Every structure is written in structure tokens, then in C-alpha cells.
Image (tube, rainbow, N blue to C red; front, side, top):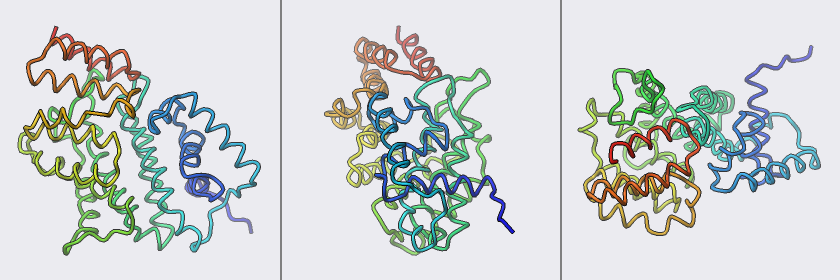
Amino acid sequence: MRHRTTPDDDLLRLALLAAHPSLSPQAGAALTLRLVLGVQTADIARLFLVSEATMAARLTRARKKVVAAGVPLAIPGDDVLADRLDTVAKVAYLAFTAGYAPGSGPDVVRAELAGEAIRLVRLLRSNNPAAQGNPSLIALEALMLLQHSRRDARVDGSGRIVLLPDQDRTRWHRAEIDEGMTLLQSLTGGGAARLSSVLAADYLLQALIAAEHARPARPQDTDWVVISDFYRQLDHLTGSPVVRLNRAVAVAEAGDVPAAFALLDGLEDSLGRSHRLPAVRAELLRRTGRDEEALASYRLALGMCGSDAERAALQRRIDDLG
């Protein structure tokens, strides 16, 4: 009797296609985001910090390579799957990021896409013993649950972005926060974290940052010194310009705006297409009373931004200063 496939089987097969050794991790991840999860090419390009034309060409080459190599659309055996888990974790992470930071269109949050990323990680961990205990997947699931728990508070009744300090914390999903904290405890309990790779350390540090945001009942009780130190460790671990930008925000929140400015130095080369760099710079300028420079930087960010909701938020900043 032939086994009848389920939507879960199909999702796993298609996602594991990204981890096939005939494809580079970047090409496989991009292909899965586009074909399996429906992320737009422009948003994938933003995730990989390249132009849309460059990403479109990469996707075309990846499709041709899959056809030429005859990559099987099947779930590999347990012994093979164990070597591909980190690659699939990266795909899920990118999909989740695309759900919570849409680079274009009217959506503030694409909760369905973020939910699919969480479902993919849960499917992997429930279908394979190696995946069940994989530190990268455990840390990633904790991170996603902690972030996803805030989805209902991120947008107000008018569809506008609600920044973290202004969110109604009674709308956060406490059961998901508790589950994320439990997963974190399984990695960090008893002293040193149980990690297997740089990727696991990356996701763990991000999850620890999310946990710090989730703990206090009031935003003013958030420990930004601890958060900025986690970002320092993450910056040294990854060298990511996006992490450096987030670190600058955390350092400013911790009270050291000059140090935050210094962290922005040199980011134009890697984040030149992102509106978030001039937006962060504008906020730091505003905090130091340099309103005219802040206005110019906000306007630069506005012109670069493709997200309707983020454009509206930037325009409100400009109106407030103007």
C-alpha cells in the first residue's frame, strides 16, 4: 500500500532540498525561501544584503542546478539528515526574519510566514533523534517563540507599527514565552551552554537577548547593559553588520550614545542599501539635540524604505521634529 504524503511531509522534503550538497547553503536557502515559502525576491535580496537583480540571477542559477543535478525530492535517512540540520536551521531563521522584517509592502508582520518557520523547526525536531537534541535547532526554536509571542502587540488598531517600549505586554503570548524560556534552560542550565557550533552560539545569544526583553513587566525595567553585552558577544562571534547596527541601538539605550555613534562607523559599505542605518543614525542625532542633521537622516531613510508601515513610522518622526 502506498504511503500517502501529508503537507508536513511536503514541507520537510522541500526544505531539505536546500540542504542538498549539490547546492551552496546560500543558494539552497534562497531557493527554498522563494519556492517553498513564497518570500518575494526583493525581500530575499535584503536578507542576503545584495541587490534584487543579483538575487534574481542567483535564484535562476540555483533552479538550473537542481534540474541538472537531479536532486531527489525526498527526506534523507537519519544518518544523512544529521549533517544537514544547520543548513535547514539557517533557512528557517531567514524565513522567520522575512516574516518579522518585511522589506516591502503594507505588512508590519507576516505572522503566517513566521509561523511556518516555527512549524518547520518543530517538524524537524519531532521527526529525527539528531534534530531533537540539536543545539542550533533548540536555540532557534527558543528565539522564534520568544519573538513570535509579541506578534499581536506589534501593530495597533490602525495598522501602525508599535515599538517594543510602547507595546501592551498583556497581549504577549505568555505560554510561548514560557516554552521559549524552558528551551533556553535546557541549553544553559547547570553552567556553560551546551553548544555544537558557531551557529548554535549565534542563535543562543539572540535568544538570550529576546529573553531579556520578555522578562520585565515594564519596559523601563529592561536591562540594556546586559542586552548590549550580549550584542557585543554576538558582534565578535559573527562580524555581521546587522548585529553591529543592533548593538549600536542597545548601547545607546544603555546610555552611551557616543559609543553607539562609533559603532556605526564603516557600516555604509555593507548596509548602504538598508534604510535602517540612516534611521538609527537619525535617532542618535535626535538624542544629542542635532535636529537638523536628524531630519536629513530620517529623510534619507524614508527615501530608501520599501515597507509602507516603516515609511509611515519614519514620516511620523520627521513630522515630530519638523
